[in-house]
Each structure stands twice: as C-alpha cells, then as structure tokens.
Image (cartoon, rainbow, N blue to C red; front, side, top):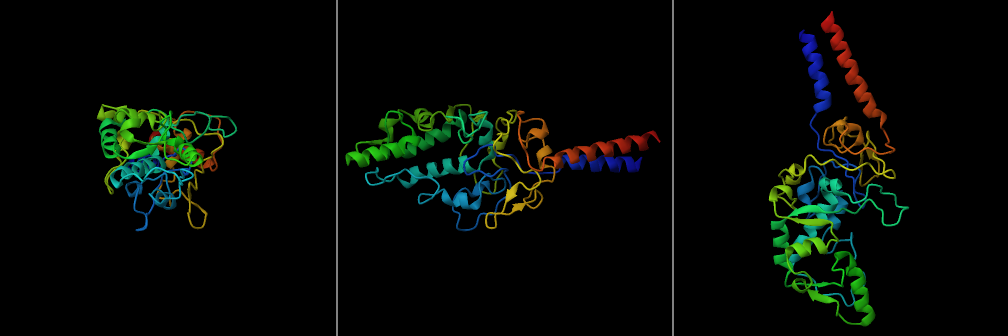
Length: 308
C-alpha cells in the first residue's frame, strides 16, 4: 500500500509541477511561450515581466523613447515630444503589449493567416483596462500634443506626420484634450478599440505593476480561454525558448518551464484541453502524448498492485 501511495504521488507530481509558461498567442515580436528572462542593467523598462515574459531582453530594451521597435515615420514636421510623465504611459503600454501573456486571450482574429486581408495574429480587441489607469494616463497627457486625424488612432500617427511633411506644417498636431474628450475616449479611440474602459476594477487589467511582484493580470478573467493556436505559427513543445544570442532552441526545463508545461491547465496550449481547438501543427507534440501515456501506465500499474 505504501508503494501504491508513492506511485500515485509521483504521478500527481508529473501533472502538477509548478510552471510559469504559457503560449503567448500574439505574433508581432512575441516569443512562442512566456518564460523566465534575465533583463540586464541596460534594460530600463518592462522589468516587471521577467518571471514570465512573452518578450526577450532585446525587445524589452527596444521599448523606450529612443527605442527601435516602432517608428512614426517622417519626423521633419512631427509634433513636439510629449512630456516625460506622458511618455511613461506609452512605454508601459508597449511593455504590456509585448511582454504580458494575458493579451493573447484577447487576440482579435481566430485565423491568423497572413495571406488573408485584414487578418493577422498581432491585433487584440476590447481588452478591458482599469478605468483608474486610463484616468491617470489621460491626466498625464491632456496638455501634450499628438498628431491626429479624424480616426484619432495612434496607428495613424505615421500618416499624420507624412501629411505634415508634405504640407510643410504641423497642422496635424493637436492637444490630447482637444482630440479626446476624456479618459474613456482616449483609451478606446487611440487604440482602435483594442481596449475598453472598465469601471469595475476587478474586471480590468493594468499596464504595469511593481518589479518583483506577481503579475496581477494573471488573476483577471481566469475563466477566459486562450484562442485557437494559429495554423501558421507553430509552438515547439520540447524546446519552446530560443537563445537570443545564438539563435539555438532551448529545452523547456532550461527555459524554466516544466517538461509538461503544455499540459498545465492555464498553459493556453490545445493539448491541455482548455484552449480553443483548431487544426494546427505543433513541433514536438509527441512529447505531450508521451506524458499522458506515462501517466496512464502509472495508474494502470497502481491499479494492478491494488488488486493484487
């Protein structure tokens, strides 16, 4: 009987080992799977996401005022730079988008095929953001300027700057408070309905949290499943991490994940039974079936010993 208890305990540990690795489910600069990272002293932002990150140190470093991730095009007639207190929120939003695994739950398109017009794997839709965060953002930026047209979208700043350059003026530059009537209008319109303004703080996400603390966003919408795995974006189960310097694949264990990370309830991987199902190709998928087979074999052996 003691042997039986030990066998069952060992089997339980196979399926319940602690892990912090989930499929990222967005495809821009994102990693395949969120895993632990070490951000050097040269990475000044996004540091709160190190324990489970969908961004690499290189991407995190690129999220800055002088960053190389995003470009707003011709700066010849660009608007004056926003204040530091305003810029802080744009950096936090970039870190949130690139590094937080939870955004994957709000991916806009079910099918991420790049071959289809207006279909992609990077866009999100209607992700609820805490009203208090939006309020603080609006308050910090309301007196700064932004290049805006009728869409009022951040994604159209490049086109607005291009028109300024063509017309050799800065007519597109307007105060935030003239473009957006309030914090809710800003959070929704500026990001093309990627976000919503959530007054119930228990149902809203935040775009930053203190470094060294658990990501509070992991406790929001825990019952919301991840979307289906995109057919054109495979996830390597056995080697989910890529060394940023060498480009070589790293095993799940070396990346800080459990060997059976993809079988965990919150991993967002279809094999765990909670993510939406789709036709997909997953490198190393046989590892998951091996785990299940081993577990089944252990239980079978345990049952035989019990009957004996």
